[in-house]
Each structure stands twice: as C-alpha cells, then as structure tokens.
Amino acid sequence: MSKPRKGKTVSRIRTGSFERRLTMTRAGLFAGTRMASHMATSWLSSADQREQRHKAMLSKQAQFLVDELGQLKGSVVKIGQMMALYGEHFLPEEVTEALHILEDQTSALEWKAVQKVIREELGADRLAELEVDPEPIGAASLGQVHRARRRFDGLELVLKIQYPGVDRAVDSDLDAVAQLLRVARLVSFGPEFNDWLEEVREMMHREVNYALEADTTERFRERLADDPRFVVPRVLMQYTTPHIIAQTYEHGHPVSSEAVAALPLERRSELGKAALELFFRELFDWGEIQTDPNFGNYRIRLAGEGGNERDQVVLLDFGAVQQYSDDFLDPVIQMIRASYEQDLPAVIDGGVRLHFMKREWPDEVLDKFGQVCMSVLEPLAPASQGWPECAVNDQGQYRWKQSDLPSRVAREAARSAISRYFRVPPKEFVFLNRKLIGVYTFIAVLCAEFNGEPLLREFLYGETRDGGEPGLGGSL
Image (cartoon, rainbow, N blue to C red; front, side):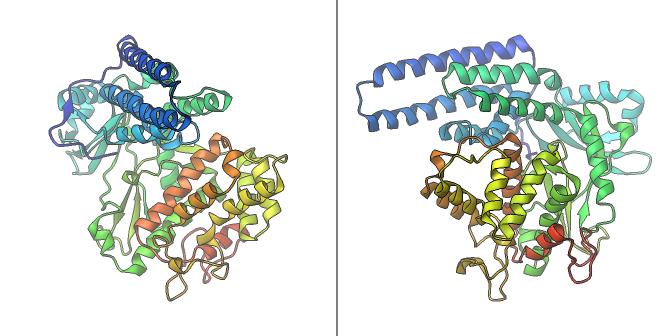
C-alpha cells in the first residue's frame, strides 16, 4: 500500500456496474477502432516497418486504456496492477509496461466518505471507543489505511478500510477488463489466458475477503510467535468487519530507507537470512505463501526501537496468501533438490510434471531449460560451483545485489532457443516465481552478503545450523 499523494483525494469510487461498464466499453470501442485503422493502413509497409509501427501502436493503445482504467479506481485498478505484475507470459510487453503505471494510482478517498463506511461498519458504540486519524497513512486500489487510538487504554491500531462496493464489482470489472482487452485487440485469448484470468478472479476475491485475511494474519502470527525476528500485527476482532480489518499498529522503517541502509553489513545480512528462511518455511513446511512481493508489505524495526533486542521484519499484509497442493509443491521441491544436487534429468522431470516442459522437446532444449532453472539457485549452491567473481566477497560470501542474478538468468534464457518452445507456465508457478524474485530483490535491496546453502540444506535434509533448531531461527 502506497503513501497517498498529499491533497490528492476523490469523493467516491464509481462501482456501479452500468457506469463502469459504459466507461470501459467506450474506451474499448475507441481503442479498437484506432487499432483497426492502424492495421488497415499498415499492410503496404515492409515487415520491419510494420513491426515498429505495431509496437508503437500497442504502446499508445495501452497508455490510453491505462488512463481510462486509472480514473475508475477500485477493483478495476487492482486487476490492472495484477495483470502488470503477473501478466508477462500473456500480455505484450508494451501493455505490461503501461499497466505498471497503475501501481502509482494512490489517490485516497476523502475522509467524509471513509468516515461513513466506518460508522456503518462499526456502529456508533464501537466507533466511540476509537479516535481515528482522518489522514490516511496508506492508500491503494481497494482501500486505504488510517491510524487510530483506543480511548480507554491508548492502544495504537490501524484500520484497513475497503472502498464501498469494490467487493461486489470484482466479477463485472474483471469481465469488463477482459472484454476491453479483446475489443482493443491487445491480447490473444486462449485456454491458458482464460485459466490465468480465472486465477486473477480468485485472487481478487481473496483480496476483498477481509474475514479470510484476518484469519490468515492470525494464523501467521501464531506460527511466528516464538520467532523473535518477525512481527505480525494482532487482529482486533471487535473492530473487524467484512469491510474493515483492525490490527495493532506496528512501526518500522521502509526496507529501502536510509536507516536500514546504514546498518552494519552483519545486521543487514541477518535480516536477509530471516526473509529467505521465511520463504522456505512457507514453501517446505506450510504450503501457504504470501505471493505479493510489494515492499510496502514489509517494514524493518531496528533493535532497541520497541523493546526488541534484535532487528525485526514486520509483516503487514496477508491478503495475497495462496495455499498450494502437494501435487504442485512436490515437483517444485523435486526441482529445487535436483538443482542443488546438480541432477539435470531430475530437474527436467520436475519441469515436465509441472507441465511447462514437454518430453517431446529436443534434448538440447530440455537440457538448456533445465540448466536455466538450476542457475536460479545460484545463491543457494555451494560456493565451489562457479559463482562469478562479482558475486562473492573476500570472505567467500554471496553478494546478492552485486551478483545481478535475475538479469543474468534472463539474458541466458533470451540467448537460448528455449523461448521458441516455452509458452505459458502453470498459473501457480507464475505466482511462486514472482515470490522468489521478490525475496531475492528484498535481500538485494538490503545489500546482504551470505551463503544460502546452509538454510537450504536445513529444509531439504533436516540439517541444523550450529546446533540451532531447524526452522526456528535459533542459530541466527
């Protein structure tokens, strides 16, 4: 959730189905007409000229549609944001680039409208117990956050308030956005895209299900209660409703803040280890993963700032948590284990089981694909397995930022022939991959330097580090 731009508010969210559909239909028809005109006038051009003109037109189309979507706010903007984040396998690059603009759509709903929601949801008696700050501390496409204080004991809390009507608009908005993309000829519809669209639908319904998010938050809080490296807010059910989540206010610094950057390397590396271990626990132990890599979902509480003796990672948002079945997780873990053990055939077998590799592909393509997958685990491999010089410090520790691993993996994949065979991965893998990239980026932003191998071995083989308890952070 982003900090709202000062003074930038809207009086209401247009959630009426007819009103929103009318806006999007007009936009789609206008864009479709422009695309048809472009295609009609381009057929005499050379192939290179047609390609350049087509890319330019896609960019213009996408920018126009993003401008239209941005005016609607609510779930339609969240849908666009999800498409930007997870749609790289389905949408043209020009479209995903334009959709990323929606991530900055942070105008807040004016206090008068928000106050009405709080009053209707909590009732006069409950509301009288709270002193709510009219100025939001965060705003997003589906709602905004206000600080509050409980009058009788001074407890500081936050209220996450859902914009009125967005939960009812999810299905109609998603259908309208899909229709808009179709009319504007910005995407080719097929079974894979339709499956992914349904996954976005399910994610959207989870995002607006505040009862589910409250339960998930409490579940993660209980799981991490004995781990001093993490802070999870406590949900206050007496102030939580279908459209409001009330939880304790947990202070901290943004991950990219100067205060965090000024920490000694050892402390930043410990925070990085904590983030990596949390991901492993989600994957190996719980089968339940927070898939939103947005840094706004995390804060860093420095040692001594709240009675804590060590630096802590504050986890703030559990609306994007997804549960994974063993049918999916087993081949994923097989690929991780096989990558660590340098067992290329087993990596390929796991990819086939996940349905994003096919046995009938040429052997050289399968081998290359498997090698690219194995390279993703570079920070978790033994240091002897050929780390590039830029990725290792003079103590033999992995330098997560300087390694530039995501870019190197992407370049390696682009230089190979696998792009001609690789199509659309399983929808579960798309979200898991984004999570992994998010964890790597989190550690890189911390400029942490450590080897991930001991952590991985703990979860693969049950080994402990320096006598500590597996999975509890006892040795960190």
